[in-house]
Length: 363
Length: 161
Image (cartoon, rainbow over all chains, first blue to last red):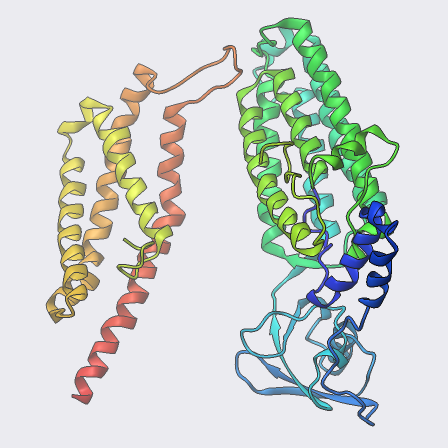
């Protein structure tokens, strides 16, 4: 569920990417030599020529103004041609210590879009003196911190409920009955899910070194922790009712859960492969692994598998609050999937249009 | 009317207010018949009625571009009394309904059941009452801020005439 991974390429690099994608996907047409020669010839200049074409200046001077007051904060000189916005922010921080690089948003004009860290000064400069507007974006936290907090919380909270901390449930009731095996299975599955997420955040995902406002951390933690408490309360309750169709329902949904978890894992590993992240993103193609065959049908199989996991968990425990959580997550993920699907359609002009965003053949 | 940009009020605040009114009428006053003879019901009904008459006159005259200063003044001043009056009426009504809800187990589901879900309407009502504490001051001071902004503008306008 890493929608925030920045796999967007800037508009300028679209040409280059569609070339690469064409190379991978249209293998049949490559046999056609005529087409091949056309391809080679059409690989012309891809970046629009910067306004500063053959200037003799090797350094830029950057004037930074406050976006709200329009007053000059400082001037950075001796900025080399190949510096990026990231370098500018570092220099800015050195010159004016109270402007931290992760909290600064730089714009070319007031009200314009914030410039990304990877953009070079040369590409936006129209002369050797550049004016940028700086805004303080507020307290920021890194995405890694957000994910770690989001996923550790539910892991621990569910275990608190599972271990039946005395203040939560009535002591007499809980001591009396034996718990149905599905309760233990549910705890196991839930823990596997979140442990896998944590390990993937730490070792698999190459989360872009971006930051997000503190508010996002608080709202997403509140959402995850709140819902986990709610569902853990009912599943581990002494008066829990096991599923209506008994062991058959439990086994089928447990197996389905494990399949979806494995699928999600393999897709995440594939997406974090250097070819598929950042500005060089080309569409991942299915390989020998059967779990990746979902790429034939949908653009974002990681979301598909995740929704599959949660639906299996709902069916396994037959608990309405889990169903509500699944529904909300599905709505959120389908929005993310639609966005990503549109980006893929735009970026790769030869993209196969029969694919759907998240659920095969629907949505 | 806010989302279709007929009047310049925010969709979120207005829908919040509409939802709270609908909730109070249907889910509290209509559902708990014993509460209907309480004085608090009279209190919030009067407050709402006067507020709405003034507010819709304000919108109508604004759209006709003939807004009498009296209506504008009334809208941005009378709320100082009417808003707390309405809120007290609402809170007292909910409070009066609590014992009846608990007794009848109104709109509540309890464990154990097939879908492992429970809902306690009594606790829900108490939660709603508590939520007034952070929300009411915000809305109230928002209105006071609006008042200062809009009525002082008119004062300045009048000075330069």
